[in-house]
Length: 288
View 1 (cartoon, rainbow, N blue to C red):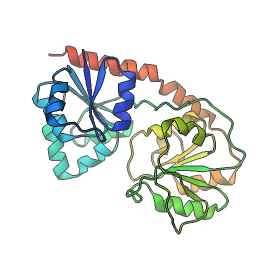
View 2: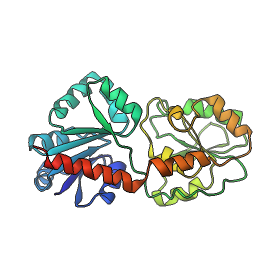
View 3: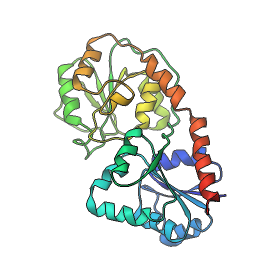
View 4: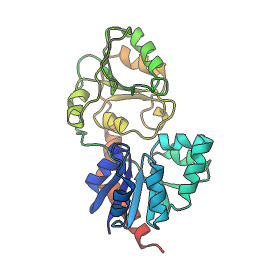
């Protein structure tokens, strides 16, 4: 059995490393010609779409009668609120064998669109989840892609940074540029996965005040490393989801989040997750 992967470069790429006998058919960064795509598609028995719908490829997978799995992770669910995109997805979904989702709240949200999904979380990247000592002074990590400042809560981040002028706020993957913000806001640009361990060792808090989110790998990485996490969906995992919560944390001495680290190691074991995904793939492959 051969598995073809379509989706985001990060999530589909990570899944390609973990699954046996899989191939990256198309990602948001790698989009082959239709001719080349079909040639590779014909060799696949199951197509696994994760994190990024690419309509022309996804619809072809259904039209060619392939077994199709869709793993919803966040923004793809948010896009369903757009009527035109929803119609396009509905066309695709007629050929889908099973839907998965990467967060329990996404399962509830998908239900409002009459999509029943099985909850299976995402896999963390190649980042060590070893619990290490915190720096003696606070430092905050934030994820804000350029062009999506509002969606990722950059205004909230600036307000908090202003209230804590002696604490550095590291922003990724926003590119370095001249700006008129506060001196403690530092743009680091895109960080390579191999350099993320070094960055995590410098911070004590992850701040992610998004308008909508799935179970971000950055959340799991930060919690796994014992960082305090303040996040829109914090009530589900971190217990911290407001600006006041961040203020309280930053006013105290840095403290390891041992409960968060233990939770991630127990609930998000890579081997267990991959084993569960492999069972889903096997069942879909053998279904009539």
